[in-house]
Image 1 (cartoon, each protein chain N blue to C red):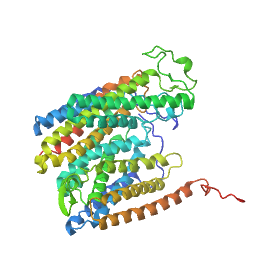
Image 2 (cartoon, each protein chain N blue to C red; image 1 turned 180 degrees about the vertical axis):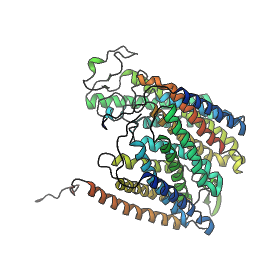
Image 3 (cartoon, rainbow over the protein chains, first blue to last red; image 1 turned 45 degrees about the horizontal axis):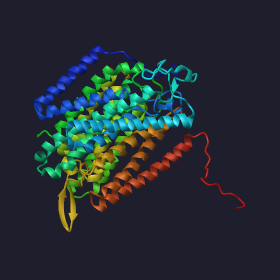
Image 4 (cartoon, chains in turn blue, red; image 1 turned 180 degrees about the horizontal axis):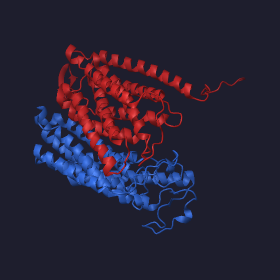
Length: 278
Length: 282
């Protein structure tokens, strides 16, 4: 096989043994957390895991086009999964962090809205560039009709391409993905922030007001790290490009759920260990 | 099963780079401990050198991993390296003088599990995946610790979270003026991530040469070190920061020069074009 034809062939197949091992690993990590820090630590870890799963699942909705999209040969936004997911998640994280004092639900939804807004703006400007800059209509190559509007796609699709531009379903998918990613990132940040605010003053023997910058920065850094890990794992799951929720690759999401849950729980456990007295 | 797109021809074998990178990073990190022994901050620049050695090793690991078409782009590898590395590094700083060793072990465990997840649960089935992600997490953790040592002069949790601020002639201890509390860690994170993902992304292709890519990594590393050394003026004494800055600028000038020479060596031909041509008769 030539280098050009060599494509990742991960495929959609599930590996039941590895999935089972993953679930067992998740349970072991939760058990370790329950042993070293029952109560606050365990609740934080569960929140972190849920946040990680939201990021992993949400990334599947985002229309990622990669290099082919930049040349107008495939639908989606012309960059990689990690960049888009990180962009949406960090925009959401910043939005949610402002609302951190308003309670869990308000802050998480604010984070979600921030991420969704960022993706909506990105998708709209990308379509502006595609339509008015490159002169190509939006058409999907994976489905005959747009699942939401019912518009037919084939007559707008150029021959030899897999579609181009951002069809309506991809736009909607991008906004949903941004919402889930932003909400997940904010959830991780809030859980760690609450935990650090409660435990760091005793650990470092300084007043609670003094420790605030450390708690915010450490929680933010852990949230960014967790976000990137989850985004890249999801990128590995969909092997590069995806059109949105109508793409056949979307059906691989159960693998990403297990992978994100294990990875988030493991990294979350490390983040919680930092405030466990030694 | 994925097909390996490019082969490594000639050059130093990856295992040699791995071993020398690991040893060099650890030795340089521990050399910053001379700060504590001699009660100065002059040796902070060794932290920057540790980060650069780790980055050189990491960029070759990216080359090994991304030679298999993983389909997600080279930058994603740099992102997961630092994403998993920062988590291990932050916990490891609590272990005092053992911090670099703990960071190494902890990052190896995290990287190994991430490798297992990618290869088996996500069904990537890439032979180099587990080892590469393990190495990447270690590189991420150690180079961040190197930048931390460069900026603050130490790598312990207390050193990274406590600083002093001088107000009206009084010196007050403050957590805001510190590596973590001041958010400098976020800048160090991206300085490292950019330096590790750029070199292979820029030099890949049929004309890839190992020494040229590694020289580019060193150049990017020194460029990041310049920025980090400028930031270190906030946290360590000016004299020590100037030493770090001089080392970084000299290293950058040398590696940049070398990289340009290697690019000219590997190019089919080159023309020393000027940005604005000298027009005659004007």
